Image (cartoon, rainbow, N blue to C red; front, side):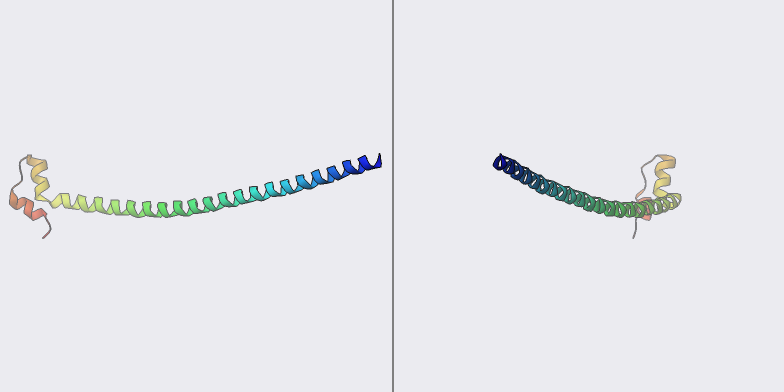
Length: 100
């Protein structure tokens, strides 16, 4: 049966072609997925770097403000009154602590 054999060969060729196309489509899809993940990774890395930089600046600012507060506490009569004597501060003591 030459005709039947030829028909089976044609089916095999069509099946192989169909599988080849499906495999090609699958590889393309996987490549696109990998590219998208890589882009997301790069974006997150940039955001992470930016956030680390911001944390560094905020940490420096916090240190500076802590030093300023510590220096202010040494000279502030309002804090001396409340900390040392636990009394209600006088209005003139409060006024001397406030910026003019």
